[in-house]
Length: 396
Image (cartoon, rainbow, N blue to C red; front, side, top):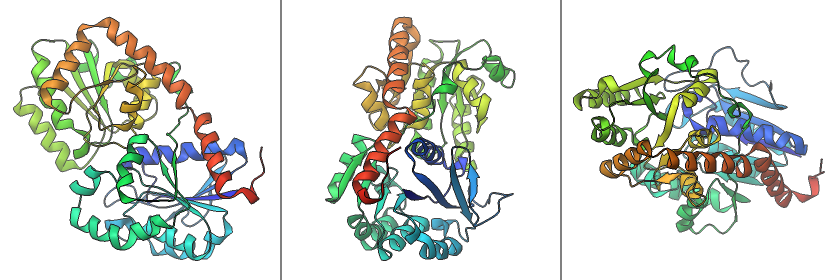
């Protein structure tokens, strides 16, 4: 089976989706699915990836290929070369798997697949939830959704959600096509044995002897970093050894505003801002932490939370993070209200209770390995593909 995945960006600056799609491609390889990815050369606002042979199939680790096409605009990441390629080549695939909405790449992929009689699946990446629809370019999104996206979603062979919460949130649109909930899986082997914390503390010495609370994610308004700073302020005096590590990058104006907030709250010397971290340094950040926090206002899954669970960290999140809600039913994540006093109390309780930390950590690691592995995701995706394109499938 040949499957084309289309996504607006594979840049690490885009956060979770850029990590999830390669994981899907690797997970499908053992099932004999030939995965190709079409995307733009986006590398964040105003930036393009360099050193790429554009519009050419570039082999990737795990047996899949990626094609990058130049973007002409930031808004919707318009790429006319991608449009031409999709309309010329979509028919060569048995299935098209579209990731994201409200982007030129997504709209073009759905239209090209429909016109050429190729079934397509849509993974909306959480943008159909109420927060995403109402908080970001509300009027533009509502107009675009009713006129462009919704008619194409109704004609999709299936919707792919990564959590029950995401599916329930999207149910208000009355879509009657196949509704599949397939969580993100990941390669858990790097988290079996983490690097020494010295890898991290050598670069960030202020974290060497402290009790570190880790936030690791793209810095965005929806992530609730402002709430986290306010909550940390409320426990700083009670826990003088506590230190907040914020790993991630985002809009420079937002990062500056958050750093100014920390200074105004009097905790600037208790917060380490690392910027974007990857590779061994990312793994070492988990090794350095005593707990992981993700106070998001909206999250259709939560890949960083899954990484923290796999690393065996006690995790604290909110009821708007889909993975957290699912994991909480197994005692693997503690849920706190999206309010500074409640979140502060939950952090303080965890810092005060080694037994609660141990219980959460053990449950988190067990659940990550049983339900969120690459193998589990690969099996579920392959089964969905077989249901949609049964005549082309050969099992491996």
